[in-house]
Image 1 (tube, rainbow, N blue to C red):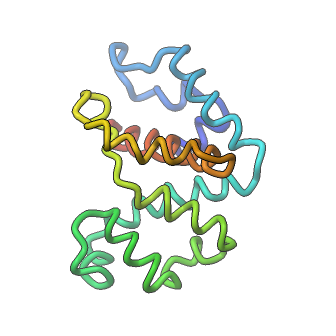
Image 2: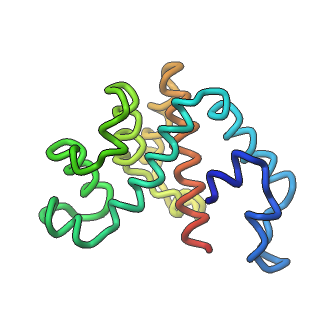
Amino acid sequence: LVVFWAATDQLEAFARTHGADEKLSEPSWREIGRWMEPLLLECDAMNVLFVAVMLHAVGKIPKLHTQLAPEATGHRQVMAHVMSTCPKVLPSFMRLDKKLRHIVQECLTREFEFKQFLHAENLPANLLTVKEMLNCEESRRMLHIFVMCIFAEVSGLLG
């Protein structure tokens, strides 16, 4: 839902369960809207964003991990393994063209812990993931999708 609320500029719906001291400010919401805006202009980008957010959650399903990626440690490794060895179990992923599947894979498998970043616990080398996404135009679109995936993940964690 957070992606829908961000795409349709519904701050009140997004924040209705937050206490007064937890609510996102209007300027912060507008900044999220600026990250979302380029994605709204492209149907493919929104499609990729929805698939990536959904698969992020799917990667945390214990049975998926046990049955399809028992050697993996963590949901990113689970998804990397499943997307590369048995992607047909992910029909939303498989219906995307190859270029868009690549974007989803990059967004879901890049090692970047946003929580550590917020607490200034990342080493400069950890920021290479983000820096690499800025090298070309396609990567900039990927960065927007990546950031919105992180926003959806953090929003889900915080309720």
